[in-house]
Image (cartoon, rainbow, N blue to C red; front, side, top):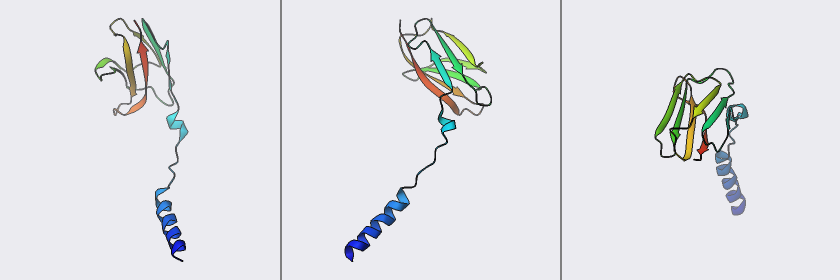
Length: 110
């Protein structure tokens, strides 16, 4: 009887903690393609909007310093890498409220 009660208690506790969160995969699909990656002199970033274009494109170096900011980017952005040093960079597309719509990374080789 004790074993039965113990098993019921464990099942009761696990039931409360094992709630599965449903994920909408449409929200997590990659909307951005980057080429070439790694890049040397230029970078092409293509954004595939689901409804509207992002409000801003921001590029940070790997230490978190802002390298580039483009307000109201088009769906096809050309980035000249003349002022970029060798390393890994993070980009973020943000909406008008500052929320990140999509992000990714690219590498610059010089």
